[in-house]
Image 1 (tube, rainbow, N blue to C red):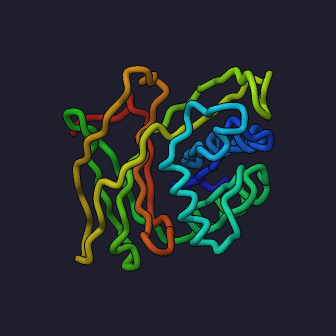
Image 2: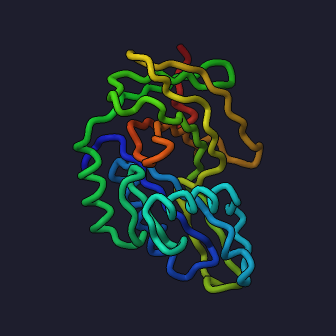
Image 3: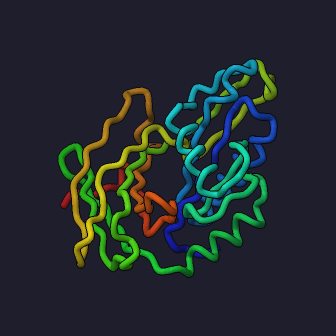
Length: 225
């Protein structure tokens, strides 16, 4: 798989029996170098099992993709690669093809370093078309297991990787030429295991949803500058 910094989003739910195979695909894609975001939606929470990772923000984000791709409705498991391609999340072959395609496109160089309780973001080699893109910061957690006791996956132990714990727009690329730099604070819940956390920053066009660049690093490996 290509090693470029490609964002792979999976809209999933512990209440969906079709989702565990897609969760497994996401884990393999992460092992191959993709930056993965597991976004657990809420619309399965009333069918027998409430997903502890679900959030309305992810359901709303998926609705933005429904409009972007002109599809009839949201569904799980849905995978989106760099904001430009969507398909059933368990289709690993399609995922790898889309990742390779995205990795060949022009992208900005994003670097992250740590300040005092914040992350410093430096962006270089900005494509001209990236002006106006949002700068989005996510905190993800991996190695998360759930013993599902009811619903479609009742009786199964599910494993998740790259679960999005928070996602916030922290800036916007202005129309000026040159590079971009900023500092952004993030908040951590004491229940999250720091050794399993990553900070992900990516640039995404507000209208087309194309991702123009990304970086990710484990929280423990962020170095001060």
